[in-house]
Image (cartoon, rainbow, N blue to C red):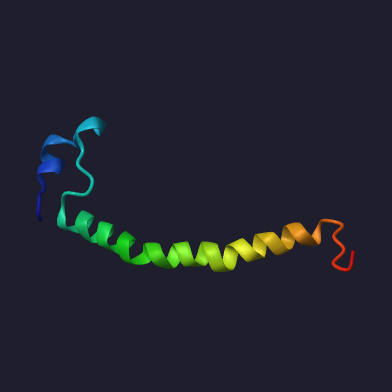
Length: 65
């Protein structure tokens, strides 16, 4: 059975925890870097027009006039 330092001395106080200094934290940062453009593209080109069409469907808009 493996014991970690945290298990022996307890968790660090909330103000002193380091989030992205471990190798898995760096992987999380790189994951966000690579997924970020996809999320931005989704919001701009999919979710934006979806919301705009919903808003326009609720308005009294006449294209001919």
